[in-house]
Image (cartoon, rainbow, N blue to C red; front, side, top):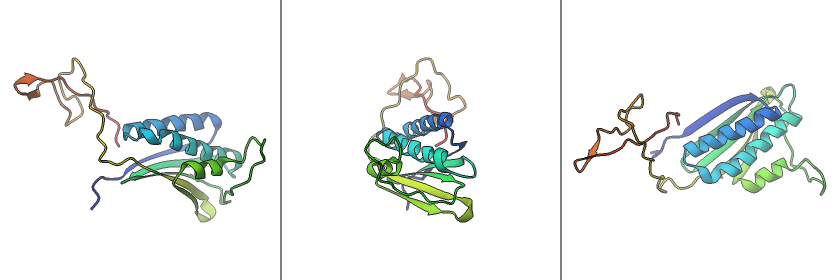
Length: 177
Protein backbone atom coordinates (compact mmCIF):
# COMPACT_ATOMS: atom_id res chain seq x y z
CA UNK A 1 0.00 0.00 0.00
CA UNK A 2 1.33 3.42 -0.93
CA UNK A 3 0.84 5.83 1.93
CA UNK A 4 1.46 8.95 -0.14
CA UNK A 5 0.61 9.28 -3.84
CA UNK A 6 3.28 10.21 -6.32
CA UNK A 7 3.66 13.81 -7.37
CA UNK A 8 4.61 14.70 -10.91
CA UNK A 9 5.53 17.85 -12.87
CA UNK A 10 6.43 18.10 -16.58
CA UNK A 11 7.83 21.05 -18.55
CA UNK A 12 8.44 21.03 -22.32
CA UNK A 13 10.86 23.57 -23.73
CA UNK A 14 13.54 24.52 -26.22
CA UNK A 15 16.84 24.19 -24.30
CA UNK A 16 17.98 27.76 -24.87
CA UNK A 17 19.99 29.66 -22.23
CA UNK A 18 17.08 31.97 -21.35
CA UNK A 19 14.71 29.02 -20.88
CA UNK A 20 17.14 27.05 -18.71
CA UNK A 21 16.95 29.69 -15.97
CA UNK A 22 13.16 29.74 -16.19
CA UNK A 23 12.93 25.97 -15.82
CA UNK A 24 15.31 26.08 -12.86
CA UNK A 25 12.94 28.55 -11.17
CA UNK A 26 9.90 26.38 -12.02
CA UNK A 27 11.57 23.30 -10.52
CA UNK A 28 12.56 25.25 -7.41
CA UNK A 29 9.02 26.58 -6.94
CA UNK A 30 7.52 23.11 -7.40
CA UNK A 31 9.86 21.61 -4.82
CA UNK A 32 9.00 24.41 -2.39
CA UNK A 33 5.31 23.66 -2.94
CA UNK A 34 5.98 19.99 -2.15
CA UNK A 35 7.88 21.08 1.00
CA UNK A 36 11.14 19.68 -0.39
CA UNK A 37 13.24 22.79 0.19
CA UNK A 38 16.38 20.78 1.15
CA UNK A 39 16.48 19.33 -2.40
CA UNK A 40 16.21 22.59 -4.32
CA UNK A 41 19.93 23.31 -4.76
CA UNK A 42 20.84 19.81 -5.95
CA UNK A 43 17.81 19.52 -8.26
CA UNK A 44 18.39 23.00 -9.73
CA UNK A 45 22.08 22.25 -10.34
CA UNK A 46 21.29 18.88 -11.91
CA UNK A 47 18.55 20.14 -14.21
CA UNK A 48 20.77 23.06 -15.27
CA UNK A 49 23.57 20.67 -16.22
CA UNK A 50 21.23 18.33 -18.14
CA UNK A 51 19.58 21.20 -20.04
CA UNK A 52 22.97 22.73 -20.82
CA UNK A 53 24.00 19.39 -22.32
CA UNK A 54 20.88 19.42 -24.52
CA UNK A 55 21.62 23.01 -25.56
CA UNK A 56 25.26 22.25 -26.42
CA UNK A 57 25.07 18.76 -27.89
CA UNK A 58 21.56 17.60 -28.90
CA UNK A 59 20.66 17.19 -32.56
CA UNK A 60 18.46 17.52 -34.62
CA UNK A 61 16.74 20.04 -32.34
CA UNK A 62 16.83 21.47 -28.82
CA UNK A 63 13.28 20.45 -27.91
CA UNK A 64 13.18 18.51 -24.65
CA UNK A 65 10.96 17.55 -21.72
CA UNK A 66 11.91 17.94 -18.07
CA UNK A 67 10.08 15.77 -15.56
CA UNK A 68 10.26 15.62 -11.80
CA UNK A 69 8.48 12.90 -9.87
CA UNK A 70 8.30 12.30 -6.15
CA UNK A 71 7.44 8.74 -5.23
CA UNK A 72 7.58 7.97 -1.52
CA UNK A 73 11.10 9.01 -0.45
CA UNK A 74 12.70 9.40 -3.89
CA UNK A 75 12.74 12.43 -6.21
CA UNK A 76 13.59 11.62 -9.83
CA UNK A 77 14.55 14.40 -12.23
CA UNK A 78 14.79 13.52 -15.91
CA UNK A 79 15.35 15.23 -19.26
CA UNK A 80 14.21 13.62 -22.52
CA UNK A 81 15.68 14.94 -25.77
CA UNK A 82 15.49 13.79 -29.40
CA UNK A 83 19.18 12.94 -29.87
CA UNK A 84 19.83 9.17 -29.71
CA UNK A 85 23.53 9.67 -28.98
CA UNK A 86 24.33 8.79 -25.36
CA UNK A 87 26.29 11.17 -23.14
CA UNK A 88 29.68 10.20 -21.75
CA UNK A 89 31.43 11.24 -18.58
CA UNK A 90 34.62 13.07 -19.47
CA UNK A 91 37.75 13.86 -17.50
CA UNK A 92 37.89 17.61 -17.95
CA UNK A 93 41.22 19.37 -18.04
CA UNK A 94 42.02 21.44 -14.97
CA UNK A 95 41.35 24.79 -16.68
CA UNK A 96 38.58 23.61 -19.02
CA UNK A 97 35.34 25.61 -18.88
CA UNK A 98 33.12 22.64 -19.76
CA UNK A 99 32.97 18.88 -19.53
CA UNK A 100 32.07 18.46 -15.84
CA UNK A 101 28.26 18.32 -16.00
CA UNK A 102 27.70 14.58 -15.58
CA UNK A 103 30.44 14.46 -12.95
CA UNK A 104 28.62 17.16 -10.99
CA UNK A 105 25.35 15.25 -11.29
CA UNK A 106 27.07 12.09 -10.04
CA UNK A 107 28.50 14.05 -7.10
CA UNK A 108 25.23 15.64 -5.91
CA UNK A 109 22.77 12.81 -6.64
CA UNK A 110 22.12 9.38 -5.16
CA UNK A 111 22.13 7.78 -8.61
CA UNK A 112 21.94 8.76 -12.27
CA UNK A 113 21.71 7.11 -15.64
CA UNK A 114 20.59 7.13 -19.25
CA UNK A 115 17.64 5.30 -20.86
CA UNK A 116 18.01 5.04 -24.63
CA UNK A 117 14.71 5.57 -26.50
CA UNK A 118 15.84 4.21 -29.86
CA UNK A 119 15.62 6.69 -32.69
CA UNK A 120 13.42 9.01 -30.61
CA UNK A 121 16.26 10.07 -28.34
CA UNK A 122 17.18 9.36 -24.76
CA UNK A 123 16.27 10.16 -21.17
CA UNK A 124 19.01 11.25 -18.77
CA UNK A 125 17.90 11.08 -15.13
CA UNK A 126 19.12 11.41 -11.56
CA UNK A 127 17.60 10.71 -8.15
CA UNK A 128 17.70 12.46 -4.80
CA UNK A 129 16.58 11.13 -1.42
CA UNK A 130 13.57 13.07 -0.16
CA UNK A 131 13.18 14.00 3.50
CA UNK A 132 11.02 11.65 5.51
CA UNK A 133 7.29 12.39 5.21
CA UNK A 134 7.14 12.02 8.99
CA UNK A 135 8.84 15.40 9.27
CA UNK A 136 6.19 17.93 10.25
CA UNK A 137 5.21 20.56 7.75
CA UNK A 138 5.52 24.19 8.79
CA UNK A 139 2.37 25.71 10.27
CA UNK A 140 0.03 27.34 7.81
CA UNK A 141 0.22 31.15 7.92
CA UNK A 142 -2.68 33.17 9.29
CA UNK A 143 -4.36 35.43 6.73
CA UNK A 144 -6.21 38.46 8.06
CA UNK A 145 -9.51 39.41 6.50
CA UNK A 146 -10.42 36.14 4.82
CA UNK A 147 -14.08 35.28 5.39
CA UNK A 148 -14.87 32.54 2.88
CA UNK A 149 -13.44 29.33 1.53
CA UNK A 150 -13.32 30.93 -1.90
CA UNK A 151 -12.82 28.54 -4.80
CA UNK A 152 -10.68 26.16 -2.70
CA UNK A 153 -12.78 23.50 -0.98
CA UNK A 154 -11.47 22.24 2.32
CA UNK A 155 -9.70 25.39 3.46
CA UNK A 156 -10.54 26.93 6.78
CA UNK A 157 -12.84 29.94 6.95
CA UNK A 158 -13.40 32.69 9.48
CA UNK A 159 -16.63 30.94 10.46
CA UNK A 160 -14.62 27.99 11.85
CA UNK A 161 -14.50 28.06 15.61
CA UNK A 162 -12.32 26.50 18.24
CA UNK A 163 -13.33 26.65 21.90
CA UNK A 164 -16.13 29.06 20.99
CA UNK A 165 -13.77 31.65 19.47
CA UNK A 166 -13.57 32.61 15.82
CA UNK A 167 -10.29 31.72 14.12
CA UNK A 168 -8.72 33.32 11.08
CA UNK A 169 -8.54 31.44 7.77
CA UNK A 170 -5.33 29.79 6.70
CA UNK A 171 -3.94 30.36 3.20
CA UNK A 172 -3.48 27.47 0.79
CA UNK A 173 -1.92 27.30 -2.61
CA UNK A 174 -4.14 26.53 -5.57
CA UNK A 175 -1.33 24.77 -7.45
CA UNK A 176 -2.05 21.10 -8.06
CA UNK A 177 0.52 18.86 -6.68
